[in-house]
Image (cartoon, rainbow, N blue to C red; front, side, top):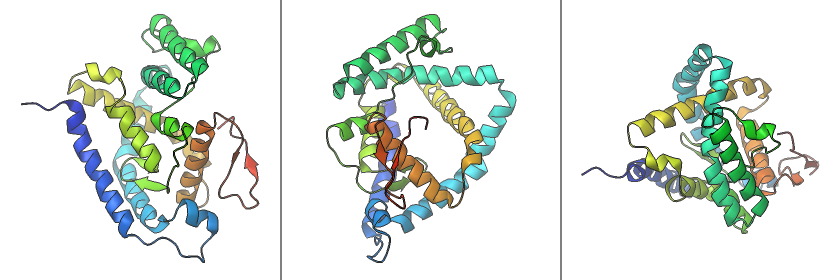
Length: 255
C-alpha cells in the first residue's frame, strides 16, 4: 500500500532533524572567552561549520552545476516565468499565515495577488499583481511563531536545508506538511519533478548574488540569514544586527 507523499517525505527530513539535534546536544558551546553575541546566537558554531562544509560540498559538486546549466539553456523570460509560477503558489501559504498573525491587510494582498496572477498572469507565469502595486508579503509559520512570541532558539545549519533555527525549522515542517498546499493535489512522480525544478530555479536565481559574498562565507551567510528573518518577523521595521561592532541598527527595506 502506497504511503501518502507527506509521509514519504517526512521520514528522511525527520531523521535528519533528529540526527542534527542529537549531535547538537553532544556538541560543546563556545566558552565565556568568546564574543558574547556569537556565543548567544550561534553557540554551536564549530558543529554548524562542519554542516556548512558538507552543504558546500553538495552544492559545489551537484546543485550549482545543475543550476548553471539551467541558466544557460533557459531564456531570461522563461526563467522569470518559472520563478513567478512557484511564487504564485506560495501565496496560499502567505494567506494562511497572515490570518494566523491577524494581518488582515496582508491576507487581502495574498488573495489579490493569487487571483490577479492566476487569472490575468497565465496561471501565475506573469507577475501582474506587482504591476498593480501589490508586491508580495512573504509569510511563513516560522514568522507566525515569532509573531506570537516564540523565541528563535540557537542558530543551526541544517544538512541540505541550510541556515535555520528550531523555530524556523518547525515552521518549515508545518508549512510543508500541515498547512493547505496546492502540492497536495499533485501525485508523484510529478510532484517530485516540480519540486526539483523549483529547487534548481531558486539556486539558479542565487548565482548572481554570489558576487556579494565577502570575507568568511559562513559568517556572511549566518548574519544575512539572521537579519533577514528578523526583518520579516518585524514586517520591515528597524532591526538590530546581533553581530554589529557598535550595536548599530540596520534598515533592511531593500534586502
